[in-house]
Length: 142
Image (cartoon, rainbow, N blue to C red):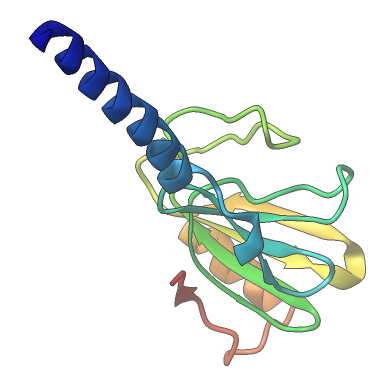
């Protein structure tokens, strides 16, 4: 009788924990943040974020986006890449300095271009080339 009770308790615990685990670790589509130009900041998993365009033709900024800012003309973002490429995104990225570094991205809406990943020096030069206003500064993802 005791063995049956233990088995039932174990089964009940498993049945309750699996949905709880899935709920905690699932991306929450209801918390998409609309940016500009049809792009959205999206939770991409447990404490991860990415920036996605509205169609498959647009290049995405893969997780993990750690800071961003946007205007009607631009989206700027800082990213710490995940350890491996994720097949969800519609491109493979080349990270010149390895995946442990911070990389930068700029989306230029009028040209429909997504520039990145860039190292900090390239990012600052690209900001100047596109006349990105100084008040458009990266802010941490909340």
